[in-house]
Length: 289
Length: 289
Image (tube, rainbow over all chains, first blue to last red; front, side, top):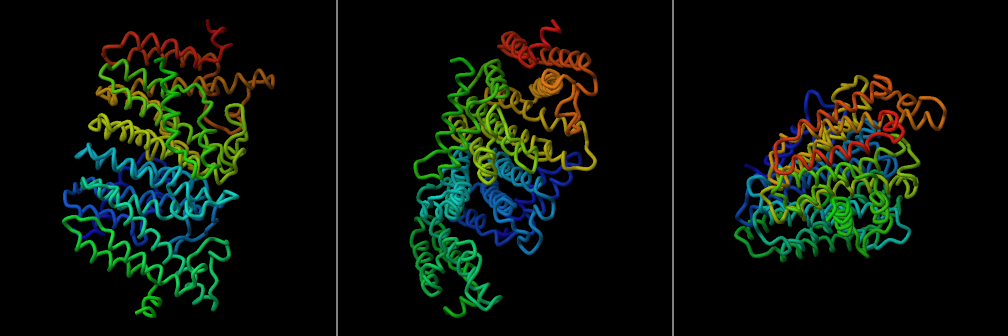
């Protein structure tokens, strides 16, 4: 089965276990609303790709790990959009969860999505329980305190920010968890896969910074977007557009070179080259061609 | 080691893994602040007591399950106190987390405590991984959608409330998870332990309703407290004080009778009789004596 299809199926399967005719209707609706339709599913695709490249995959555990990573990503978006953070009214082209369901349900939906991620792992781990503690620990490290995405968000409340920790935690941590969890689900050596995830996470962040500049360039006729408005660190601000494009390429080359020896190394390289092209905004890719 | 000491040690051990010199300081402080000093630790004491009664205990897994249950309880208190819910400025005699650290850090601290609960399970589960999927699944069911404490809280946002589901989810679910997780950590049969947890959860809720009425009677000279003010369902309101005391006794008797056959059944009964006396407000216990 194609990876995208596997991931959507795994997410649907996980969500079904959060739904019941005698559960609270609004919360249950908000959970589906926050997960479907999704974005690019970049992180869970990475988990599946690494697990397949490693060989000894246990499909149920891989799918559970991939869907856990995506559910945690969705939870972070729901909470980041809350009035006390970005106060964002839109997400993925529709009203954000708090705009559609109210702030209370948005807080609870984020909480329930976090719990659901680990519920999926409990189910998917029963076939190969000896691999479960490793996969579980990798994913909690990518999300929690002191170095996961929750910690990354918490840096924005600090007066003195450790910029390197902020950037690594906010984006890199969940990408690193995505590659490492894929390896652990396939009985690979997770630590060997950390650098690949960290590189791709940084590349994704640089591409995101570029999109922030370019989207605004198209819309407002000037290269100023949200990162400038909110005074967030941005590769495009620090390096300029051409510099950021060069950085993005270097990161992807670094990522490709760092793939550990494994049965599916070449196929994974080909896949990641194709995937990384999706990181770049279309018009940038054309200009850079 | 005494159960209380075991639990505090396990919580400290779990918290240490959320702290680092290069992590975000405010979040890290808020995590400790939310967990220490604790309340009565009723739920994790129950987990440890059931695991010991069952016999084949794996102490690391039991401690991890007990601390996971308490961390999830603490997370629910932090989020329940938020301005969009109870907007409570005080908790356990000191400023609530959002009052002390701000709303953003309170949202993130709740999230990080949920993740930390599962992190503790990842560590504690490595010795007996074959028991981990069961323990993990019991705990996610007690917390998430559709029947865990998050769902219980979500019922408060519904126009038409399923009262039985609301009460079972809001308090009973995590008590049932506490007994069942203790059994699963000791390789017992978790389902046989659900009813004990559900009974004790309901008893705890009735005692809480009584405290709400009596505290206000002492303080304001009239039997009206928060449940009346917020129009919450309350056993003391429905049954009257004497009726609620009778209900509490019946529930505890039911709980004691329902303990499954196990090596430590008698010791557990004795322990639960002593514990249940702590449910009752002191002056009520004297009056009822």
